[in-house]
Image (cartoon, rainbow, N blue to C red; front, side, top):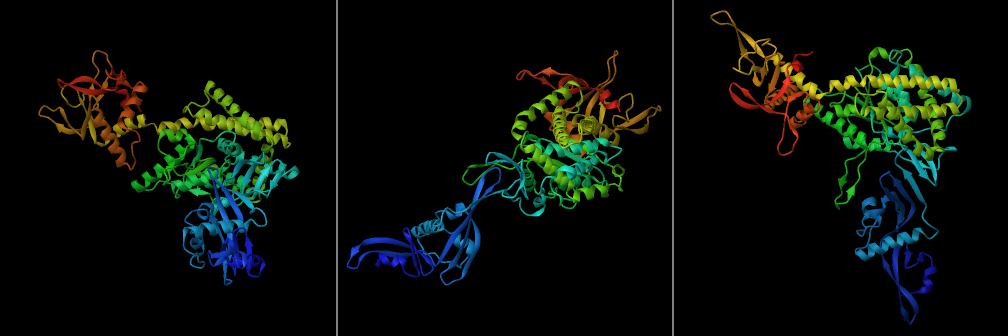
Length: 632
């Protein structure tokens, strides 16, 4: 038993139910009065002291995670270095955090009660001079409402209506993501000079002005993701050396002058999870995934295609792949919250992915090589980033109103585009067009407030809208190239031509009377009377019902055989057929390509096959017009 007066002796400091004795934490318990008076008993908890110097909260946008920054000293004077301990580890009943972070240097006395009391002692000791300082670190860029004010987070701080403030901390991690750093907003003559430099992007591809219009509209649209999520990507493609990566780097320089064509935040060698995590952190900014280049290996090409499908489809759906934790709680996944520019030498496979993309094809002569250094200089000098900071500062005081109005603007432009037939390549096209136009017009409103003049603003609006219309007019060609129905017919035609399958005349399963070579037959010489003979090539995938009584010629496909040949022929070309057989037949019915159908008795839906007589035997076939195969 120790007298109560001991609490004020050297090497002994009491606080609450705990004390520091000879440089280590102890628990103390009061005991009843004895011959020596009231006192307490000491129980050693460990051989060190430590203190929580700071609490750090990391806001990822999905959930907050807390860390306790702790430093200490062992009783013999050995320092225990500053460590960041997850709050859940510190407060865990296991109480093993000290050895996890400091190894064998500290010693903790055994027993669950000792660990619980050590945690309480550290907590209480750290609060003796007031609450532990608390700091929030944001793990993403873009808009966040803090203290009732909209602030745009960036690695250099945050931009609000008053300008750049450094009291807000943003940490995007190591690597190129840290280059998302905006400077203080430009103003006055410097701002007007930067505007003139940036608007030169409209003419960066003189022969294809729509490319500059799309890129400038995309730059303007990116910071408006808080008002309405961006559910599409801009996909630039062309041969190596065409300058597509240089273009993407110029656009990215609006969000950080340190970006260049060798420092993109992501590329297609990243894992799917890494790409999604980075794109999630690049909220309300521009994000670039560089160098989509399918491998010569079919396996690697398939993996890359699957990665593109997951990323682009997730962007279009604004959805992530959620996971179950070990506790069976649902962990929300990361999804793309940026406006993404993809660069590549090829396009993704499938109409649905192209429908979620605005495609720009860039050829080597499109960007004058003598002009590129001028744009790079403007980017590296920080003019683009300073202009973006001024635009964001202008947006900050208008965010609440824009969150209400911007979706209405998009809907209005979307309806106009549909009514005027401006974007007919895919049902998603009007929405993408409307988002780009609404973003561009918001940016032009800012430019007018910055002093460019209404006449110049009107010309700029007309130029961008004209360029966007031109860009969307070219999307139909890309959709046609990825049309799996058309591709199915083309694959069968190629299989006929290469001798991988054939179609026979339906009555005798003989060579068709006209153009037998076209339908997969090959000349086998002449018979005894001099008539040509033909041999069938490959599998029989159907039958030809040639013109009779003025009726057009029909092709009766045996579905299983035809699909097998088309899919195999695609694989032989190092590619794959993206639709299942049932989905393909449904699409052909929807397009009116199947001439004759019958209702299914159970579902009351049209069946794609009907019974027809082939060499006096009834079989089920799909009836198509021969013109589908004969047309170029």
